Image (cartoon, rainbow, N blue to C red):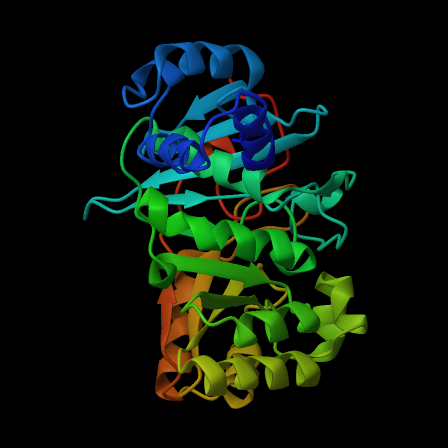
Amino acid sequence: MDIQRLNEVLAAAGEPAYRGSQVWEWVARGAESYEEMTNLPAGLRGRLEVDLPISTLSVRGEARSDDGTVKTLFDTGDGRPIEAVLMRYRDGRRSVCVSSQSGCPLTCTFCATGKMKFARNLTADEILDQVLHFRRVEAVDHVVFMGMGEPTMNIDNVLAACERLPDIGVTNRRTAISTVGWVPGIERIAEYEKPIALALSLHAPNDALRSQLMPVNDRYPLSEVLAACDRYRAKRRRKVFVEYVMLDGVNDLPEHARELAALLDPRIYKINLIPYNPTGAYDGSSPERIEQFRAILHEHRVPATVRLTRGRDIDAACGQLAAKAAA
């Protein structure tokens, strides 16, 4: 919902300021229409229905995975494509993976979004409307900024969205922002007073390989990125989650595992090993190679888990979002 436009419509109608809070409370609880907002005058409900869409986004298509994952392709008001994913887990968690940009300017070689043309940053309202789309279906309790785009290059709008997520049912401790290592953005998250989790897309244990996979490393090399993460840990007293996609023969060799273990302080970092979700650029590591990699990290006392892949069959898994028309 466009909150600024909502306040303008209410002011033009001569309504008291508290009407805006009433509308937002209904929307945050999953209301699908203004007609449901029974504590608003009927005339105002009708005016809002005409003057203000309940979402800034329109749905172009949706795809459903055999594992319960749902991917929705949206268009913004100016026709920019974005995708968001609802992930359902057996323990009852309902997590929404949201986009922060339409496309991405950083062109990581293993990521489908990086092959898209970058359009623009999303507004806080457009970010929240991705979550609210799924909230209208069922309650959600986790949000991860791991969809299209680099969240920390749009950090003002991302943090503005985080401010309102608790109203929808997602606490700050259940919100995570992922970054490829955009140091100014990491610094902003470290200074942010709310307990937002930080996830670092690392994917290589040295600068040469990381620059090959992620051109952003030429601007912010590993030493600068890890120093910023260390400052986040010191400020927020939370571990940094490291995302490491497993690419067959590229970054998954035993020497890479040992180098990674030497690079990361286990008091600060926890590693998520991510089976590669095909985008055409690389082959993914075998389960046996991933387990060997994890075991080497464990031997060096570096905690590591293998991420459960969701929605691969509908191109909804990590690195696969590319605004394809949903089936």
